[in-house]
View 1 (cartoon, rainbow, N blue to C red):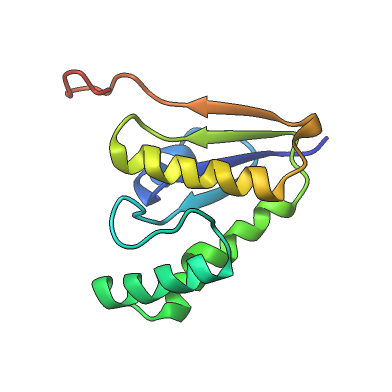
View 2: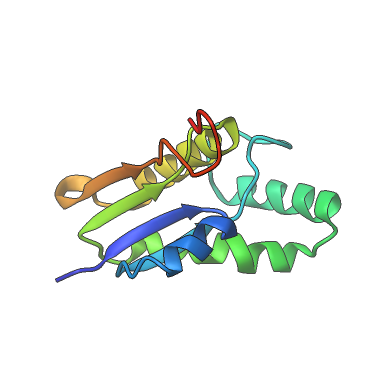
Length: 130
């Protein structure tokens, strides 16, 4: 049986996910697409543009960006029975989720896939988490 693919929005989500005991491959979406330049299409030029902006804004090298974000997206091309999108309701998460969905649509054969959105609607100590 093919594994599940879990797409997590950021490293904070990874910490809790690792404690869950859920099986499958994991992509941590390490982008902040709600800031900086974007284009309608996500392709090689898009990632180069983002690498330039990220490296200038956050003082990391473009190579670091590609290694931590872009190179990990190759997992979309691996066979998975289901894809789970772990994104919350805020603008940052929603913009990143839209980009992840575009990549799924571009790269994944969706004919036999189940895609789920996992969005917690509550969190201890936070009123109206959504």
